[in-house]
Length: 290
Length: 323
Image (tube, rainbow over all chains, first blue to last red; front, side, top):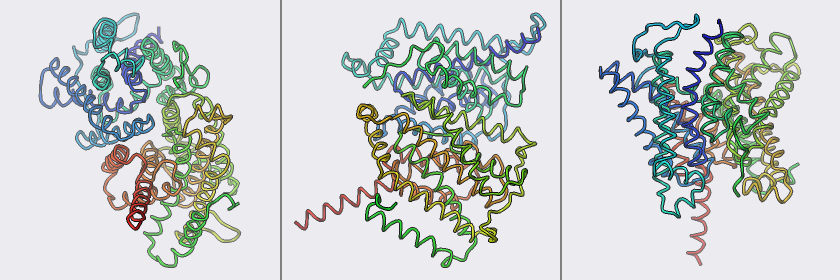
């Protein structure tokens, strides 16, 4: 029962990776770019939560939605501003812009909040639940529940709402979508907003377990990206499966082999996947558009 | 060797070499020489990265790791195992090139921008190793006592001697890049940049070329890292972190993607800029990020290329006005 503990904490972190991976996928599907600002969405989620709840003393429930709203807005702003203003729409340029923006936001976060790790209280107490000798914090349960909730919401949104369908249409064929009257620009902006929201949720719900600082997002989001690749880039079921598998693998690796190289582990998996099965576990292989 | 280089560029190269020989006689201030040495080291890294970004159209955020690998392999081989420095440098270049091949080969076959994440992942692995393998690398506090390079009995132990060494290497890298760009390989790379599919259908093995250029850029970075280690004689993981990768990428963009002279210009401009700003690292991150973003949004072709085009336009205009 020793490793049950690792599996549980692995699943918790894995759920965060899954949320972030979904964020990467949404923007990838809408624009074809790798969005580096995803790292900062995660950071900002945690830090906004800290500001609203711990500094401004706003109750946790409202802080959660305020932070979510703020980061979602920042996400939309990033599309509406730099991405749309860019003179060249070449993918490489847009990826570079997100790298630049990510540095600016991280630097600013460092100035505003300083380099220290900030604690955030658990959503509902610290009373440990024991199952088969494994200790579970209530926050672990929250992470899993909120992640499941988000996934159900996303599924509903993309399958059953007009906006969600418009986003899927844009992902499938941008030109075709705009020909049938879908506002492609607005859809892309929505993608950035949504992936901002997803990143923020990830950052907020993990913060009570790991604390939060100006650069927590970098590592989490890069691992989220590895999870997206592991599952199959652009595939949302893959994002979830990839996230959970990566989380558990990493946790087991750290617990049973060596915790020193914990951060290197996820990227090692990433490189292995790229080497042997670049389409990921659930990817169908890429059809190239000429 | 110079056959491939155009007249105008031959002139530039000659001027460049002349300036390298002359500068230490004109400038006696140690501080300026140190800054110029750093520019030289950055130029070597940026030249390689520029070939990758400009011609293979791929982004690497792992060049800090390649730079670090060069430095650490040189340092460990010479200091711990008593290897002679020059062969150690070659070993470092071969090792880095091999690693670049292993990272690049599977990733560059893919159409998407996976290389950027693969290299970033690799650079985090490399950084973790530099910090955690402290009995070999000295850990976070760094590795000291690296011997200076020597040529025969001449030990390159001061800034002026190292100036010639570093800039001579920078010159050869520049010459090599100019030559490469104008060669058959360069034309193939340009074709890939124009349209990968078109290049492929015309018989250019695009994956192989992209991998080759990535390996070459890794080797450039490794060379620069080795020179850095022997020059400063102390290295620590902090010089090879994520921010160094961002810095060199910014230098490429500012100079102009695919412009060899732009690489030198970008390295010089931004190295000087961060010396002038000279504030804490905190502002440096923001400064680099802001410059990167603004240049990309408004002058995606890079400052030097933009300026060059502007001059050309102006020249044409005056010619037309004259009739």
